[in-house]
Image (tube, rainbow over all chains, first blue to last red; front, side):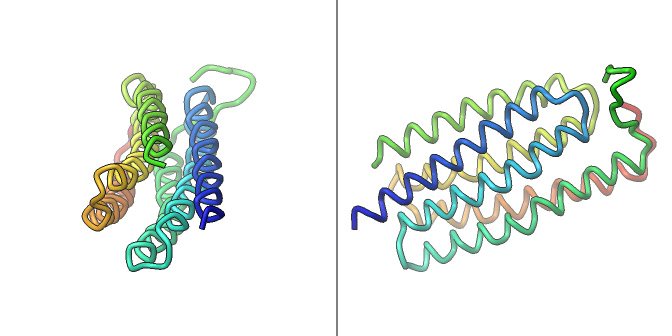
Length: 104
Length: 89
């Protein structure tokens, strides 16, 4: 039984690592589109790992099944939301960052 | 195990505070939306961990499930709205 606890700790720590990288990416990247790279992908993977870790700790119960449902939903929904936001940025003429000006 | 969950929750709260910087000082509307969706995914995990700390997992599971759905719908609705406007950052 101890193996499940160790496994869930590993997954949750992995999720935490990707949360920190996504946050660092969100703060340090120069432009909106590059920030979406970090949060879009980093957060999706972090949520997925954390939820899998919690589901392992929960075990085979209805609650564990619900956690996996949330993980599946977030795995589908987060990229869609990121796509919608970036498309809104492009459609309304938000210029992307280029090395020449280096502003924004 | 409770101490581990508590520390993970605290670290996530610190990360949310860092992301809040981008929400407040984000140069434009779009940076703020990206930051708010990032905050949303973090609070989802914090909610689940609170469920384990308070030993009421059944209640907090439903809360976090609703929160995940609302966060997604909120982002798409905001994107849909901003698509029509000519927002300059």
